[in-house]
Length: 262
Image 1 (cartoon, rainbow, N blue to C red):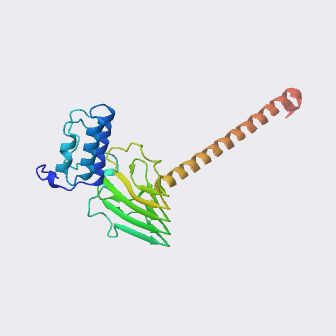
Image 2 (cartoon, helix red, strand yellow):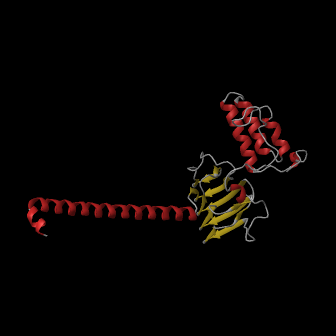
């Protein structure tokens, strides 16, 4: 997006609506809105379909943590930060095998490795399970939505450190895991929204290190262990040599003439 004039007609995503809802909640907590205004604006937020409909909702409110800045940006400029810029690749992706959906009926599915997570990934698990591993994934946008429906089954979402997670979903005799919410994302990192339905099932979210990082840490611990072992060996050798030197010195003191004859 380079022309803001066209931005109001751009379709808003679930992530955009959730960001506006967060601003409204902050405004309610700060006393800028009363409960009636908050309820009206929140309803309008979730009913909005375009940026043009979202922008007026928070026009008279400050952005989160930045007073005076428009609350809703009509551009999607990436934030600078580490390796994330290289992993947010747009719709074209880096892998022809990019997937947008998955189904497991009395079976299972996996999406892992170097795949491109789309803006919206829909999955369904019935008497089965699925795993969506984002640790080595590329991202079609800075904000993606995983819509998971688990009926007497389960779906696990694995995210790497640095990614912000928002969990929204309906649980009926089932539930969604909210344990990874509230962890601030790194600058430039994507935001993952997990939503859907869990009926007699569950949708879990785990935060794990990428495999390469885990391997690096294992090698580092192994190297440190070997270094400690080698240091201990040198200390024992030095101690043994000191003991021999002391023993030899004591023997010379006890039998000085014997050593002189030699």
